[in-house]
Amino acid sequence: MYKSWWKILGAVLVMYSTVAGFLASVPPLPILHQSIRNLYFHVPMWFAMIVLFTISVVQSIRYLSNSNQEHDNKAVQSVNAGIIFGILGLVTGAVWARFTWGQAWSFDVKQNFAAIAMLLYFAYLVLRNAIDEEQKRAKISAIYNIFAFPMMVVLLFVLPRLSDSLHPGNGGNPGFNAYDLDSRMRMVFYPACLGWILIGCWIYSILFRVSTLEKNK
Amino acid sequence: MKKLMTTVLMLMVTLQLFAQGQGSAIADTLAGSEKIYVVVTCVTIILLGLLAFLFAIERRLKKLEKKS
Image (cartoon, rainbow over all chains, first blue to last red; front, side, top):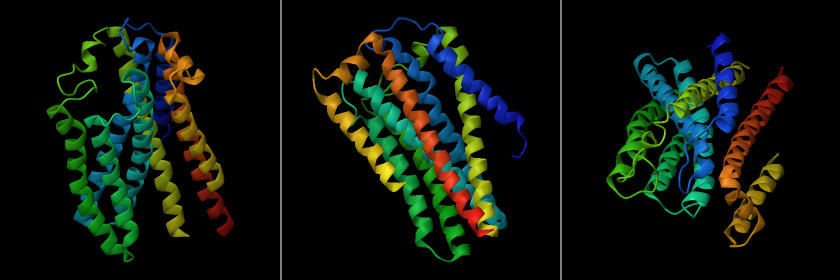
């Protein structure tokens, strides 16, 4: 966590994907046109969020197995960092939807369930604030977190697939794989995902370190 | 800080209101030029979000510095 090579790697990948994301060529697409480039910015937000929430659930399980408060703190801080990315993903998704689907919030299943998944994690933070006793708070919220994670996965990846959705990869729509078979787009998309995941982990480690300092003071 | 955040949020709300109009200038610009400005808007939002995070961390650090 304290080494810097992966932070530099993340920064370089994000820089590369931003520059190449604007300049590299994309296949000509109807409706989307150049806004397909949002794939390099909107989608990695969600990947980063999912990785951070995965870290959180792993830390929660570790807390339950050895009752070390440090694991509890790690679980909260990775949720905090994940929520930043989730909100950014929702907002960029709404902007993108405004100009491709016609409305910022068309109550599409994908949008609704993504918002509910975010609410699940807001509830996690609210639950934590509601309990004063430290041990009890850590234990209850760790258990809640373990339930919230599969719920989030189901809401984001299973339920939207079962009904009609405008979002690619859902409700009979082809995923972006159908578009980015163009291997040049993959050359930008995968580094973008990895880069933003690393930046997300960096934000999480900063939050964790600051909160550890706050606790020790 | 709260005032600043409220101002930014309110600005975003009004942006949305403008975008609803059929012939609004902002919506036309964003939808024009093959929609490349949609990407610019999204990248700006992401940057603003991360900068807001920086400010939040800074505030927490300031509190720590005051204590020590």
